[in-house]
Amino acid sequence: MRKVVSIFVILIYIFSTNLYSHEYEPYDDRLLVVFKDEVDRSIIENLNGKIVSEFENIPMLSVIIPSSRTKYLMNNSAIEAIEYDNIVEIKGQVIDWGIERINANRAWNLGYTGKGVKIAIIDTGVDKNHEDIKILGGASFVDYTSSYNDDNGHGTHIAGIIGAKNNDFGVVGVAPDSEIYAVKALNSDGIGYISHIIAGIDWAITNKMDIINLSLGSNTHSLALKSAVDRAYDNGILVVAAAGNERVITYPAMYDSVIAVSAIDSLNNIASFSAIGREIEVSAPGVSILSTHLNNKYKKLSGTSMASGYVTGNIALLIEANRNSSHKEIRSLLTNNAIDLGLAGRDEMYGYGLVQFPYLVMNINKFMDIGGHWAKDDILWTSDKGLMIGTTNKTFSPNEPLTRAQAATIFVRALNLENSRVETSYFNDIGNHWAKNSIEIAYSNGLMVGMGEGIFSPNTLVTREQMAVILERILNHEKIEHKNITFKDIDKNRWSYTSIIRMANLGIFAGYQDGTFRPIEALTRAQMAALMRRIYRYIEN
Image 1 (cartoon, one colour):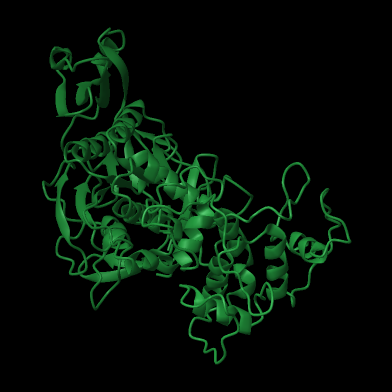
Image 2 (cartoon, helix red, strand yellow):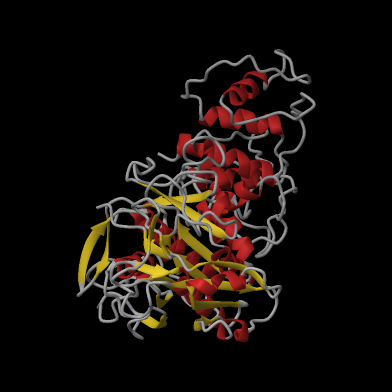
């Protein structure tokens, strides 16, 4: 008996299928035989079985064996598992705003386009003649053709989402310079055996792919398929899979070694068809996505298949931007930088959220002294915005105190005042100081004041209370909800009290865990980065 698995219908058991009946007898079983150690072909041959395929990296055989003899495999001590070679189907088409939604254009502006990243698209193949797609190679594992050319359209659509060329026509993929390899494991109806998928994964391992895209699924758990994706992951390959289009997560997206992807619409709502569940890792655009199709055409399709293509493309950008990072580190970057949607934290609809190519990636290896620092994200954010720079090319010095000159420079950058003209010099102690112009601009715009008549003291450190006063001066037009915040070490008679409390109520400044504010403590560069990130939404316009 042959078991057929469909993405769109319930599990059906049939004794034959028109697609394969011309090859095998209807009472033969097509099986996957997983061996404990080495493959022993003689076990199958002694039972008059036919070996369909053997895998280079996985101790497993795909076999055809008379149904009456299958039982003799059950108790063989050399065999770990036996299962039907189930059929899987593409995450079908239930009917490209997505590029901007995941910030791919931000990566392009920095020169990241997926260059040198090898991607195996295990699907219906890819149209070899489409003018908008460049294929570097591939393989076919279906029974009726050795060509990886697409005769369905699904694989071509996914390839376009991932890597359509950036030219003057058609569409552009998330990673237009990535290296696309077409692995045909599904037939013209979008159907294929588990063994076809495993053969594709095995090929990807042998050919040292960086990413495997699996926009397909089965409703049935397969130990053989799990072994294959686990082996790929252990070999440093990131495996991305569509979660499914019938609300229930399918396999292989259910497996821990696989990045399961749900689909969202243009309003960031979870798509009505998208599978949901605790295995969802990230979400991506998947509704009405325009991409390449057969015969040099383009088509809008929807599905978690499309969403998985966006995630695969995004991972390619992350890999190029972080060449020295492991696949596990790239996976962490993917989830850590997703935009949280739905419930706070990881949830069953969006996972960790909508995938992004964020500013954090741009500087992830820029500063060598911020790893594990509490303000790491804030530091990278301010660096990306151009508000703060390192103390050297490789260091930020997060715990060093901030000077008044540095503060003036940061505020002038944040408020886009660099080109302001100052007619009069107000201070006698800034001479040829590197921050002279920024100091004069900050003073003339009422951002900072002097320390005395004609004195600015550019190298004097800024205290926490002084910064609270400066920030209140900048944000004095903001309506602030009073939350009755107090600190042990300041009272209403302190000169900075009102500013500190107002900034605390606005969520800009915070105290320490012991309930103190420490007003005269010098403000650190890390603290300044955090403050600038918090106030930026108030001043960016």
